[in-house]
Length: 389
Image 1: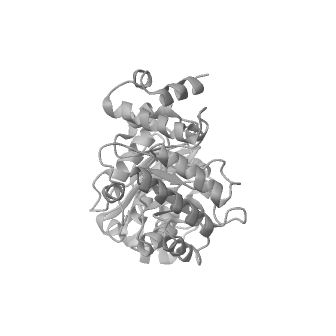
Image 2: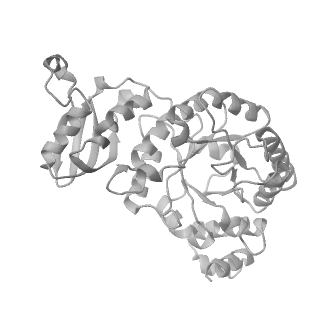
Image 3: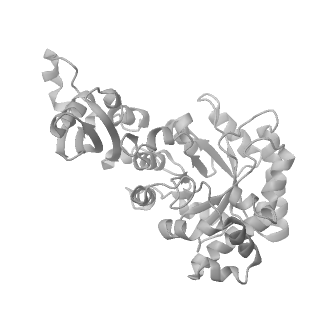
C-alpha cells in the first residue's frame, strides 16, 4: 500500500522532473549520487502522474511510522517547500491507506455523541465566541456566556488568544461560566457546551485539560497548529469531553492558493487525531474560503473513513444572521455555524443576537427565506437591518 500526495507546482522544469524532485527529496534521494541509495530503493517514492501544474506522488507505506502524525507531515510536507527549482508548491491532499488511518483512534466524541449530550438532533448547532476576545474578568465572561445561551446557543467558546492570563484565570473562568450555564439550564432547560481554551505547552496541556474538566468543563478547545496534532491526540485519549479544534495561524499555510498546505490535509489529520469540531472556513464571511476546498474539507470530516467517528465542520469569521443561509447551504445540517460580533454586536445585545442567529437557522431548516422569517421574528429582523447598512 502507498500514501498518495497531490501537489500543485509552479516551476521552470518540466512538471515530470519537478515531481521526480519532490519524490526523491521526500524519500530516499539527496542532492548528489550516493552509492547506498540502491540499498533503500524499495522505499523510494514514485511519481504516479504529472501533468499541467499537478503532481501525484506515491510514498511506500513503510516510510511512515504508524500512529505518528508529525512524522507523516515530515514526509509529505517536509523539505520540498525549500527546493529552489520549485517557485511555488502546495500540498493539496493526502490519501492515507487503511493501516495508517486505523493506527489512530479518532474522536472519542463525534457528531452523534456531541448531539446526544445536548439533546439536539435535527438542526445545525449554533455557537459564539466570547467578545471582546480578551480583557473580560471571569465574572464578565460568565455573564456574556449566560446571555448567549439564554438566546438559544449550543456552544460558547474562548477565543484563540485567551488561555490563563492574569485578568481572567482559567480556573476561575471555568467555574464562573459553568455555574452560570448550570443556572440557565435549570431555568430554561437549555444545555450548552463551553469550549475552554487549554492551549499550552506539551508538558502542561493534558494536566490543564484535566484540571478544567475537574472544575466542570464539558468541552475543551485547542489551537491545533500552534500546539501540534499530537496535542489533540493527547487530549482525545486523556479527557472524557469533546474537543473543539481552532485553526488559528492556518493562513500562514493555506492563504496562498498556489503555495503552502490546503485545509484538506489538515482536516484529515485533525479527524485522525480526535477532534470533535474543526474550523474549516466559511462559504460567506470575512474569512470565506474557496468553495471547492470547503466542500472537500466537509466531506473529509464527515464521510465514512475506516470507522473513525465524523467531525463537525465549523463555519466562522465575520458571520452574522444574514450569512447563515449560504453557509448552511454549503455545510448542511451536521455543522456548527458560529458568530462572535454577529451575536454580541446586535443592537439589542447578546441575547437578542443569539436569538437572531437561532432564528436564521430555523428559517433554513424550515426552507423559508431569512427575510420572510424575519417578518415575524423581531430579533432576526433587527439583525438583518443592522448589518445591511
